[in-house]
Length: 238
Image 1 (tube, rainbow, N blue to C red):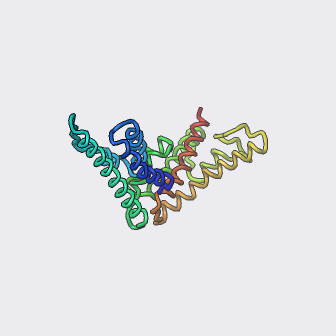
Image 2: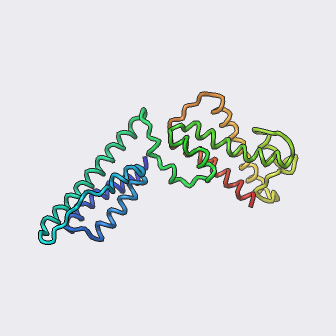
């Protein structure tokens, strides 16, 4: 749960009292609704946003101002009730580990590498987090493997292909992220190589053991690593 966004949404509820003092739709209401809509979308998704923005038939009176005021106040009360109910339901689902809360995680709000999104998006949204992580890591490994074997004409895989790609102690690496002249540059190359080799080990365990991954936030952390590695390869290819 994004507690920062949730706190902001609760603050929007508190602002309803001041909006009622306006006694009519106007700029203050428009700004409040726009901000609230963005928070609801980020926390709960598009379906909740559609419900929040669902318009009830509003009838205006050109002669009875008190009628128009009642219409305005009724809409504010309905919006408040919806937000409070949505927060209550969201907190209930978040507190129950048995329920699948994956659809409430803003997957598309994360700036993951586009190829990672394409490969894992459906799996993640369906709550198959371990499969999503495995698919993301496999995509990174495949990209390195295809490049290395195309250069060398071999058929390396796993840690061997990562070593051929990045190690430089006894060879000229096929993929270099700097000039490898200073110790700092060499340390950077080694560190990045360890990251690529690390996902091979994680991928192997998830592929050969029945690993349960029920935490969408942990899955996103893994996918962020896959995304970083894909972007490093993008930078190398430029």
